[in-house]
Length: 424
Figure 1 (tube, rainbow, N blue to C red):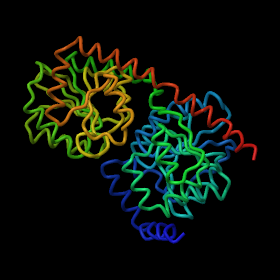
Figure 2 (figure 1 turned 180 degrees about the vertical axis):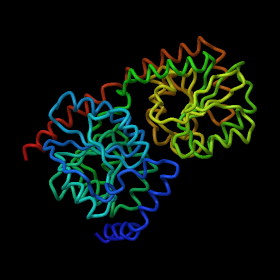
Figure 3 (figure 1 turned 120 degrees about the vertical axis):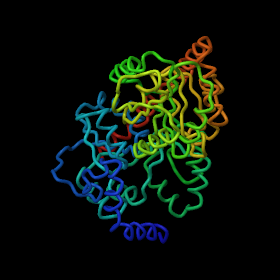
Figure 4 (figure 1 turned 90 degrees about the vertical axis):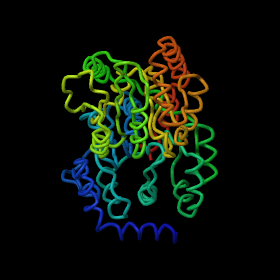
């Protein structure tokens, strides 16, 4: 209780500065300046839906992962209103792109009591589904007091994160015990959640294996290939701060096949300008996805300065590297390029995706590399070896097929609990 009060006090102390923080972040990502009042539980219009399932997808990756779950709810419960909340501008934009008017979108409020109470009173959700590891103490406890069951779904907890939660056990344990249940990705995740106090923990798998490429992304991939003029393409995807410099320096040294085009897609849009400046400083001719000026052979790099198009970038590539893994950042989602049938490389640091990374490497659907130079050297070798690329595509297809079905297991576990929530 004392720890929880201290946590809430810190939020109160930060509260006066939060609008300024949003405004400053909005200089690079204007979406942070939209609907700021929602962050404090204030809404312009009344909300009258009565059967509301709330899904919280904090950012871009969680929003994309939520696609099969949203589709299942929409198909199985046509009368249900789906409320989709986010914390980041990239997540909200992805939700708008993926779902349009089929869902209601809002910011998750800051975790201060008055804001979360207003949020719950305004939307009155039947149940809340929190994607992966997004937990906020005040909103979890407020939902429990109101009788709104919250479930952590597609949940993952790395060893590193579990150690962090254990260090704040007086805050973390009551938080996990207040959840109505946890649908974990793996048995290791389940063991870590249970050790911290969670109950009713089921293993349902990773719904990211069930994410299908939208037709619109296939069409954009065809458009990108035409723009690339059918050149050999390496995509360096979801790169993080510090990785782009390593990769660009390695690119200067790399003996890649003739006419190879390297596409760099930073994970966060606020890095687009930084990566452009880096390429300019290295004297590397590049084109921006946002411009799509006519492609010439002197262009060595495309800067993927767009949001919500990662599937298209992967589908238009011959080889993919998944960022966040060269530096100890935990990695990003490697399932998407493998599902797109692209030979996939990952770096040494994938602790946020430990199980799928290890399984993909063991299955031959992905290759682990040590550093930026090896990213480019292995990618170059694969570009020269069409037979090995074909073998990796076949292994990727088998790997994805072997791990699909998580959304079916998750829905079978969730549906009775959602129905009970409505009956109470």
